[in-house]
Image 1 (spheres, rainbow, N blue to C red):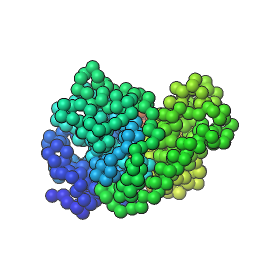
Image 2 (image 1 turned 180 degrees about the vertical axis):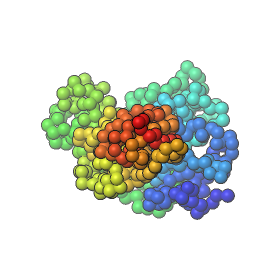
Image 3 (image 1 turned 30 degrees about the vertical axis):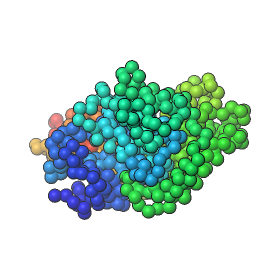
Image 4 (image 1 turned 45 degrees about the vertical axis):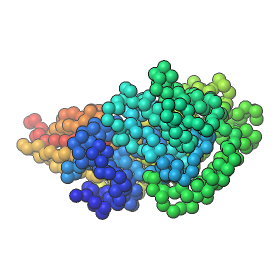
Length: 553
């Protein structure tokens, strides 16, 4: 029987049961990763065959979801008849708790919907549905104020499928918005009495709440497009701001729990965003240029971003500040990514003109993509992006070299470990700046954790071993072979694994490719360096078998 204080796989210590047990959803635990300095994590324990079977199939899909507003799903452990699902902990407060403190203004709910709809679009685009969208499963993150979708897929109701689920989910979003606004549907399903909204906003909510197929929205993107046409209210009813500020002082917690902490920073950030809204169109030439990340990229003072794009840009910069990432370097990173995709732009980022609207949308998506990758780095490393150099990873590099790893192989090991940070075409060698910063970050984050396995291949009987590789990770095996013997190597694993074999001098003797059986001549030098990478989204095992054959006389 598991309880508080139990340590799973000598790594995850259970601290407190937050919910459950439930036959379908199991139990949710607050825990810490003792191997990462007691980093908080959330762990779901599944004990019934019904819940285990469904989530075992679903978990790899959830692991593949990379969005900053969806908690990142990690390992799946099978221990003592239970399945344990590890995911990132979210520091914040759920909207059902916020609702106990105050009602929400129309502008807040409109902004919440705009921020959460892209998450739903991603979920539905992957053939998944949340299944139980409500204020309890929406959390306002403390670090940046963005809403986070909790328990994606885990809370799915019986009978809800990916075919009919999206429109039901959008209906649930409408109900959630109505509840936050302080209203409930009337007995006849009509609009709540005494709830007054902007006509455009009300029309969108009425369509979301409608049971008539011809009125429903079929996709989250359709709802988002409709809401983008609705203007944010210029002001709220009298008294709302007073109640809001007092309630904000009480809104503390993590995963919906109330912990005491000062809220002044959140309020100052809110004021700062409001000031920025009015000042940006009147900003200096240098400030306007920083929107594109390039010196001299200016525009006329009257030429400003459309309100929706401005909101998106401000949200990106808020997340950037929360992650403590250097803004100048990040803008160069996104600009360079855009120019890689559109080389015909000839080193010219998009302007604020209407002709470049599509390019600006691509820029924004690239920025979101990079933020999701950067979030995987430890905070201390994130804070140094833009200022990293060769000396920052010299210590772990030297440590591996002293253990007999050739320097060229060490670099390949870094490239293999950077696959969750860098695009595939940049993973074979050190990329140029600004991408090189992420390559060095991968070296700093992963080289200290490299496990080196040493084997001796003998004649007559093969030497076998089975090893596990984490998602996006790599394993290095050093093999000694008797002199004047040909080395026979066979590796079996998943289709998403790759292998690469080096000689003692760092030369490639077997090119990167699928796991396979190879024979390697005796003159390549010893030890042989066998590098196996896992490009999948879940931890997987591989089996290595090696045999030394005497050379033909």
